[in-house]
Length: 137
Image 1: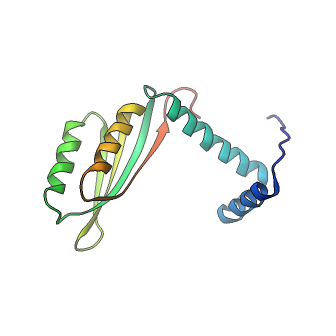
Image 2: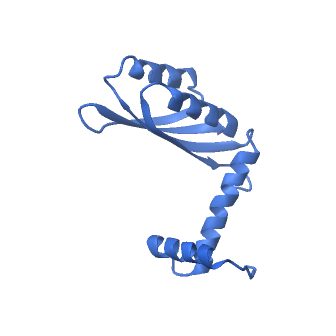
């Protein structure tokens, strides 16, 4: 391990201390390492659209909305090479939650996720992309 000295302004330090308290970090080094890993992973994803990744696509929708279920099923079938698994949950009488685990290149996964979220009547769509392969630890 290497020791690094970093200077942070008071406002940023207060934000870091708040995150530490909320998440239960034992010390600042652990918090900064964790935040650095997250930032590096995000930078790798943004810089390499052809890089391999895994992702979790999460979205909600009103299953009574016209044609939404059919369109979602068709989208998953049209991109079957990306979909590893899907989970469908009935939140209440009207709302459903779906979680899809995706695997492919960053660009393909992002394009598919953007396509799903853009569907009419999709609510609260979010994708988390995690780089996979060498150098992603």
